[in-house]
Structures are given as C-alpha cells and as structure tokens.
Length: 416
Image (cartoon, rainbow, N blue to C red; front, top):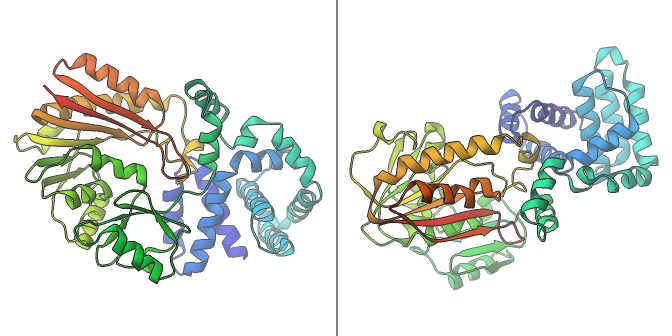
C-alpha cells in the first residue's frame, strides 16, 4: 500500500502546485510504467477522492497540526491518509502503518511520530473534527469561498443543488449509434449481459453503475459510445440535414463530431488546435466507421486553415472554465481563480468573431460551453449580438448539473 499512498500523495502535490489532475496522473503513469491496473485504479480513486474533499481534509489537518508542516510531501501524504481513513474501506491500522513507514523515509525519519500522532488523533477526534467542518462553509461544501459566493449570486434557489451535484460521482451515460442499432435492441443486449440501465431519450442510456468500456456490448464495433447526456444536446440542437457542410471548431476528443455524423451524412470538418488530441478524434471516427476531414488549427485564426467555402452549420464548443463538469474534474474548482473568467470571455469573443464570417447566409452556429457562469454564457451572447447586426438568436438554454447530466450552455444563432 505504501507505493499507492506515495504516488497518490505526489499526484495531489502536483495539483496543489497548479497542474490539473489529468496531467498529474499521466505524469505518474509515465514515471511508474510497471504499475498494475489495480494500482492505477487505486491511485486514481484516491486522487479524485481527495480533490472532492479537499477543503474538508485541509481543515481537518489544520485542526490537528496548526503549524506549517515543513515538507510539502508530508502534508499531502497526511491528506491522502486522512481521506483513506474517513472514506475508504482499507483497514485503518494498515493506512496508519504505511503512512508512518513513508514518513520514515523522509528527513531521516524525524516525522514518523508526527504522522502517527496526527492520524491516530484524526480517528479519536473525528466527531469534533467533523463538527468544525460543518461550521465552515468552504469545508462543508468543498468549494472555494469565492465560488460559493458566485453560485449564490447567480443561482440563489439552486446553488445548494449545484454543490451537491458537484460533489457526487458523475453518471455514466451512453449514446447509441442509430446507424447500427435502436434503443429497444440495445437495452435488450444490456439486459442479456446483466447490465442495469435506463433510456433517457431515443439515443441516451444511463447505466446504474459505471464500468469499463471493454465490458460494454457493441462498444468495439461502434454500436455505442460514452457521452454525457448534456453533451449529446449539441448535435440535436444544430438542425442537421444530409449534405450539409459542417465545422466542429473545437472538436477533440470527438464525441460531438461523431454524434453529428451518426445523425446525418455530412461533409464535416473537425478542427482542433492540439494535434495530439485530434488523434483521439480519428480513433473515435475509426471505431464508429465514420469519416471527416481533420485539421489542426486555431479557430481564432481561420486564415491559416479555412479554404474559403462557407459552412452551413458551425459548432463553436469554445474553451471555458469547465464549471459545469466539476464532478468529472474535481480539481477544477481549486485550480480556477476569479480572474480566469474574464480571460476565458475574451478568448470566447475572439473565437465567435473569427468563426462568424465562415458561416453561410441562413446558416446556423451553436455556441456551446460546459460552464454555468453567465460571464461565459448569456453575457457573452448578448455582447456578440450587439456586435453583429446579422446575428439572430433562435434560443438559448442553461443546463445545470443534475443526476442525469452535467452543466452546459447552448445558444443557437442564425445568420440573417
């Protein structure tokens, strides 16, 4: 276990230093290529769990050790061990013993007593420590104070439900490929495999329990893909018709591109600024037996990649704060800063202004984010409509995170 604790603590330390959790875990896999799948799973579960309980665990640690802990690794080892003690099924004595063992490898063993005492006190004083958590809004909600304030400002009736959704595990939702199957047939395949699920609409299926895609009937043959129900709304809202020329302006990893191609025979261009991530689009297209033109380029600078032919439809799924998908990326709330939203808004405005001239007359553009904050959504839309007299909004909707889907924003624009 000490190897799992050590690598989980190093991962958490990197996130605390500003690296996102996905990158931190990827760095762990590169540094320890011989890890088993079970070890990787355990490290990932701990790291994600710590991020979901970050403010709570830090407050507990401060209650137990008011002074600064001299070694960053030691602090994050204690946070990992606290998470394990409170939220894992691992034997408590094993968690404590392995953490003490790891502490013994630091600074010639000077902190073994500290780690042992802190963890045993965490068990003895748990009720009082949890009371301190309950009295601290940031720790109780496991969101930064400024984030909670923004939620309360924008969603006074819904902010507590948003927080609760953020702190839950996300649902695993599938999208069936209607070119290859239909909902009754696929549900029957799941039932035959002993997989409990429910249909959310004609193509979306929510599983009762997450599982590896390798266990999904038909996945390798392209019958089904994994995609959040909220994300599936993008292709539905674009009013796609066969023969249309379509641009997915920020396509990676390709879920929305593939969904559009499953709906209609399109001349689709999948654009992304990251060539490595664009390779994932290619992999998804191949698995599903679909075709598209893949381009590496910046949506804000179409002069570098556009062939001059207008598009009938454009999906502008722009970079954003990702505040609507916090439960899938629990580190986001701790990495974001209030000033980030103005930066994202400027980037989004540049992208909208650059893509709009590429749209054919009477064409439609779907502006999409996985954010729940108005600065990136309704306020961004209003500013764009004020800049462009030929843009008309056909409708907008803010989806807040629920048990069925993540948080997304959609605004459908028509060029007149």
